[in-house]
Amino acid sequence: MGLIATMGDWLAPKTLGETERAVIEHVVDRVDPRLRVVSGYQRKLVPAVRRALDYCTALVADIPGPVEIDVRTFGNDPLVHAFFAAPQDIGRMLGTSREVAKFVALPDTRRADDFYALIGMRRKEKTVVGPALQGDFIREGVPQRLLYFADHTLRELSLDVAETRHGLRASAVDSLAGSFALHLDALRREKTDIHTAWEQERALARSVAAQAATEAEAHEHRRFEIEEGLREIASSLEPAHVLDALSAWLADPEPRLYLVPVSVSVDRLGVLSQPAPDNPEVRTLSFPELVGRDRRRWIVLLARISRADALHAQEEYGEANRYLII
Image (cartoon, rainbow, N blue to C red; front, top):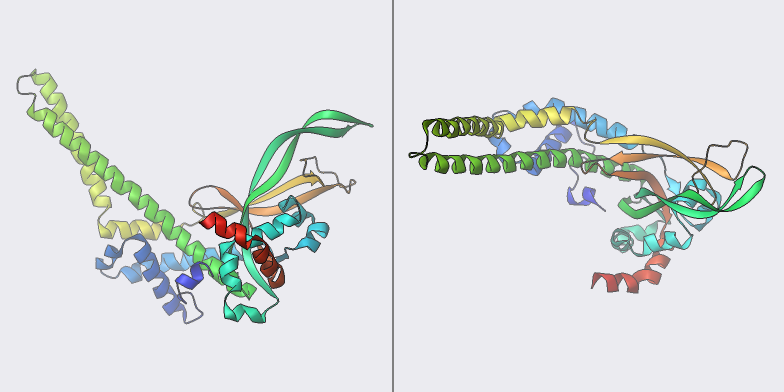
């Protein structure tokens, strides 16, 4: 069920105030529980959390779908055809997914024919050599750029597409909090490095008694600079300052998590081509790529998947999956 299962119902449709308070408590736990020592921390975070929730709601709404993912759409939908190299790759994705295995085993899922999920994958390109039409002639050995997709993954599985989007909003807010936590960890490591440098300068300063006065003065100046930097970063890590920085971070979510629209034109074999409206063999594919905390891009869309297909795939790939886990 993904993140929404582990968080319980902290984004459930209660009153707005309760939702905001629940999100604030989750964000504080994610970043640093010591922020609770700051007087009025909830009140100070409310505007930023409201901004983050609105932004994440709009971002999730812009994810296209649901698109049926099965063998039939592989033959009829150019987008699905491009995403998988062969029809059996759909079964492989379903059969080797731990998320799918856990989901279809839940008693409540047995009543539905289909379920929904976010499908993510990475866009790849490679150079191949093959035949190509140049003018009126087909030439062999022509270098071409082949588009393909890898690392297919499924998350936020549910029986209702609205519930999947609900879980994705929770994941998006968590991603914003997680990226700030990484930023905070980097500051703490920087503080440790500066403190180490300060200790080294102190040791050097004690050993310059027999050195020239100018050299001793240089060490003293260097130590003073390090002390200033240490005081500055230590101040920025005080709970009140961290709370202010977190508020600013959540109030400006666009640089941290966003969708990039992508359009590419390919032929039926996946070879990148120039757009050609009059050529039915060349299709222009449009999809969004999600950029998150690790700055890598994931193609994302909502998928509708047959439970029967998922069960069949799990049976087919179950033994191989268990072997890989062991």
